Structures are given as C-alpha cells and as structure tokens.
Length: 211
Image (cartoon, rainbow, N blue to C red; front, side, top):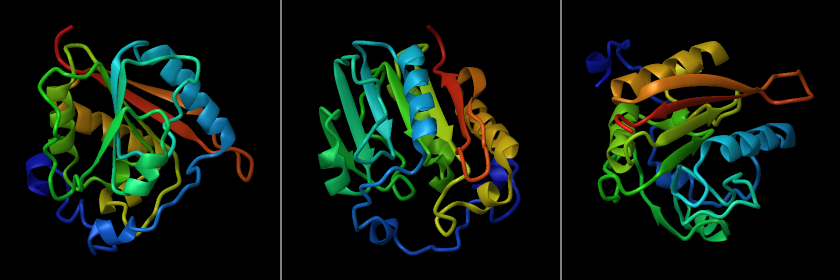
C-alpha cells in the first residue's frame, strides 16, 4: 500500500493498532475544534455545499457544523459510534463502518451531491481507496471538503500525518485527492492558529471528474 503511493514504508502505521471499534466505543459528545474554527467551517460549508443537495458526512459525530438555515434533501452520516451518530440532528440516515477495514462505501454511483470529512482524514490507513469511493458516489463535479486542524488523537493518527506540519498536511491531502482522481483541487486557510487563543483550520476541496 505504501509503495503504491510512493510514501515511505510504514507511512500508515499507527501507535495504537488495536481495533478502532474499541477506541471509539465510548461516545465523545464534545467539539474537536474551537468555536472560531467551527464558525469558519460553517461559513465555508455555506459557500461550497449545494443547498437542497444530498450530502454525505464521513467520519462524523454528533454535530456536522452545517449552516442551520440551509435545508438539504438528505444528509447521510457515517462514523464509528452509533450513539454519536444518533444524536446528530442533521442526519436523515447514518451507518457505522470501519473504513480502515472496509473502504467500500454503501452508496450508489453518482448518488450524492457533496461530501465532507471533518478533522478525521488523519486516521485513514487506506485514504486513496476511501477517496476513490467518494469520487464514485459523487455526481460529476461534486465537491469533497476535507478539513483539519492541528488537533488529533495521536495514537490513532497515521505515521505520515504525525511527521508533518500544517502545510505538509495540506500537501498530503492534495496528494491523496489527486491520486483518487479528483480535479480542481484547492486549499483554503479558514482559521489561523494563535497560541492558546485560536485553533487553525484548513480545508482542501477536490471535485469529482466531469461536471
């Protein structure tokens, strides 16, 4: 897997290789980025995600940071903790699946208008396989928004992520998207880091081919 992407051997190893289901067994009904970063992400979603569309929020939790005044035809949630997903009031339906074990999404081809992965891409051990599945499920030209901060669960983040800074993380996510076939890839700094004051937040957007 590492060789196929040209990354160093062990790039996707983790400190904690126990089953992810065990790590995420207890619900964490907390925010993983601060209020400033949340607000910045919501504003970005308002501008990028299609109102009235079908969205898929991958690796999600009890909150999706979507603009509250915008209605979507459907919001499909995915994660590893059923209690968290059931608490998310924006979800029309949701499913639990370990993408590191099974990267194939239970979504039909060209069935969604947009997708999001918020502060979780660092945990994927088969990122390109997962993103290719997202591209398959997106309608032509549909956006995938991958956002991340400098926070993470370090024992579950893959080695290549732990070895990079914010700029390196952005380049890595851009690389994942290119390898998965996404086009018109753009990186946006949504919130700047200020020590003990504000979390950074970066969003990398790629669009599925066509459109």
